[in-house]
Length: 308
Image (cartoon, rainbow, N blue to C red; front, side, top):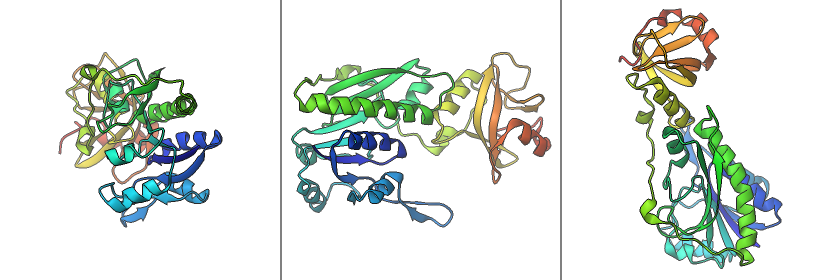
């Protein structure tokens, strides 16, 4: 089958590689435009594009699909199906109607729960015990298309959003593979979502990652897990950014709110309980475990964090 693949982040490669392994012909890859990054603000292409170039698959990078030229080019591939995995660009109705078998999209939640850009982080923030993967037919709404298949998966203890996302896309690649076969063979009847039960997620900003030490330790730990890798979790010490990377928590604490304490480990007081810091990074320095950090930053012991 001739398939156009649409995806941008590295975890979408799990889906691309699986459908190639199934013997489908990927006639083109659509991914977002190269991004500026680093101190020199140089353009860097993503790993999906790298994969396409390495395997001689045409890679197309439109800014959006507002241009008739871009729409005409996509139609010219005459693909049977589009597979979408975290592409990041909305597809207009004209494109959705281009393919004989439609556009199949992988969404890492149990739709209609957690529509939108941050389903995995939202599940962790809400302390859900499970989430899942949905394969749906794209329509013009926000993750509102009919469901073709769905699987539940547990959220593991201490799992970060990055780790969970990767795992869901590994599992989702298998579900996508099976769904393509069953859908094309006519063995699946799409199930409309119950739209009144839908919940929506927001796109997080860097500001969301600043830690509020007035919250209970358990909530802070959930936020740190949910915001790894983006937007990351941080506080301030002596005007310097301090990234908090890996933590656990204890409900009992004799440490003042926001105070960092060096002992057998690094602990920071919260409104209820304390967090135990395992990995952290001071601005301009490398990531350290707690033991190495305490040896090199003894002046921070006893400071109140978050004060600028």
